[in-house]
Amino acid sequence: MVVLAASIVTKSGKVLVSRQFVDMSRIRIEGLLAAFPKLVGTGKQHTYVETENVRYVYQPIELMYLLLVTNKQSNILEDLETLRLLSKLVPEYAMSLDEEGICKTAFELIFAFDEVISLGHKDNVTVAQVKQYCEMESHEEKLHKLVMQSKINETKDVMKRKASEIDKSKVSAEVFELHPSTFYWKRLTLLQVKVLITSFISFSLKRIGARREGSCHYNQWALEESRVASMI
Image (tube, rainbow, N blue to C red; front, side, top):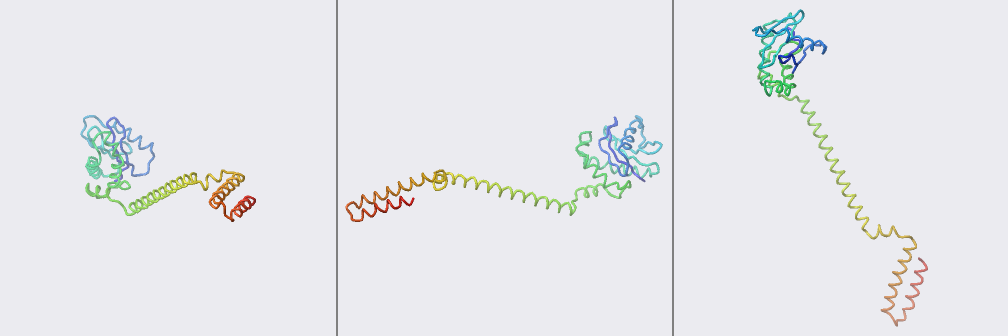
């Protein structure tokens, strides 16, 4: 027994799902599936139809066909058994037994077909086993998910640190611009700084001199003022 493909097609010939189990070109499988509706006669009760090269084993599902494309040397009884198993799996995974429901769950159906047929040969499995196998997660898949989640968390932490650094730099810039000992003085020329310092010293010495007016040390304060001014 060699199953070439398992497919779900509409009665008009539109392919909804198709899974090939042997190496064949896309043109060939499309040609085989396109020829199927023309071979099926209306009102016939047969479950298979043959051509010169292949056999179609099929079962109607609502307005669609579930079919197996096999070689002519395959065992027809085994083909029918495989078809019955697939027909039980389709309602388990399809959202609804119509074109839209089949298309929305195409990948789930393909995965289920893969659990039943391997390299064109039927595996000895049940519906329950197929569902269990499809739901199982491998160790490699879990490890991959953990690694990916770790990378995502690390990226989030880096972004948070960068955002925090940007906020701190903004605050520092605002403080720098407002602080009189940095922003203001940097915009004064050297001459303006000298004038301000001289004025400040002169003002301070005059106040001190006023409080000590009449003192013998007043003249010394005046001399100190002139000396400091000359140094600047």
